[in-house]
Amino acid sequence: MTYLHTVNPDNAEGKTRALLESVRRALGVVPNLFRVTANSPAALEGLLNLNGALGKGTFNAKLRERIALAVAEANGCAYCLSAHSVLGQGAGLTQQDIDAARLARAWDGRTAAILRFARQIVDARGAIPNAALQEAKRAGLSDAEIVEVIGNVVVNTFTNYVNLVANTDIDFPVVTPRTALAA
Image (tube, rainbow, N blue to C red; front, side, top):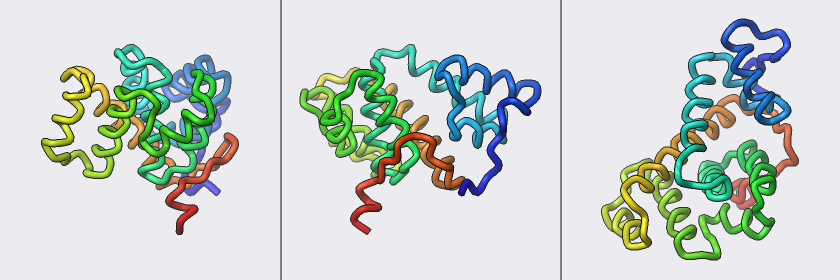
């Protein structure tokens, strides 16, 4: 059961209603993550704006979904693992791609380097050693792409934390973090 109020888009007013309607237009539904985040219209707007801006970056949807899966696994967020497993399939990822991404792995070296770097950022809470940054650069990531990885880690960490704090009801087929399976 969700610990925070979930805003019903049909009863929302003003800016909150408009933001939730934009989610409905984009996804066809308003997932519980956005209903919980809508408790703060400023936070919802920030989430949508950052996510939208990163969607116009250099990383395609498949890569952004892989990063989201790696971050969600690192943070133990079942809601985001569940959502991004569905969204990843919609972006063209296979189940094998999804399973690998959760472990910060991929079949091609460049994608694997990006996922490793994203996971290092999460694990080190941003304070990565210079060797990790140099490894990303050796893999061919430009400074712009490194910043874009950081942006994707940030937006996904935000949603992970919202869902973990709120215990958001999962409205996707449930995927359990491996950390929870080991406990």
